[in-house]
Image (tube, rainbow, N blue to C red; front, side, top):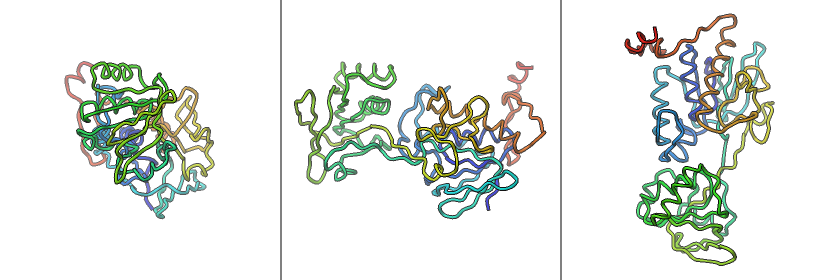
Length: 350
């Protein structure tokens, strides 16, 4: 039996940052994740994708963000159960919980924080004949290592942020990049749309709209695709076809835990601390929903911070916690280490 103060389900960025906030409160964390390494989607799907909306980082690669978060929580020595899925939950008479994984590992904690991102997920595949035959032979649904596309002809399909971001990134990697979207308007960030349009003017990318990829061709590997625009078909030579139509999320076993679910997400009380309908169980990050919810990493960080404050009160009933800024208090690790705030900073605050 693994015992901890806060059991976090999901080792994505929100779950990892929750470890840091809990550590500041002297609370111990243990994390369960079905993936074999921490980082969630950032590590598994797009470790080399640049992220632009993390405060203090004009641009940071997803994999580097995970590394930084792991470095940040190292002093607090969190435990990890990786490669196992949280399967069942049992509430004990004292209000604490036992969570058992699909491999039988049991975890005991007074507080559960579900930070499962989108839950288990699969890519949304376009309904094209033979697409399964070309998977790993020219067709991919995620980009883990952009160097795979060095000096190759790449066709991306989609109109959201991922399609736009990878079009921009691969413009300096691939020999030829074509973006196909079924509408003239894109759904992504305006800044990204403007960058793609500028790349088109410079002749660095091709944009075909409104259009759809309607068939794939090749023998041992993908060689050409058919693009249909306004009823007219055009064949394009391509080495790689990357349809980026998002993910089909599934909550998995958590959907059977008695949590209140709305549109495949867990409803929480956002007026206070992101607690679910079950006292002691919180949901933070992309896995939750509430009025005005934004699925952004930085929003997950905020939710994790408030969740930890409530977790402290549950674990230490009647004990008052006085919040101190880390610039004043420094950071104490469970290993006895301490990172002091710079004296000049302390003096200016005093």
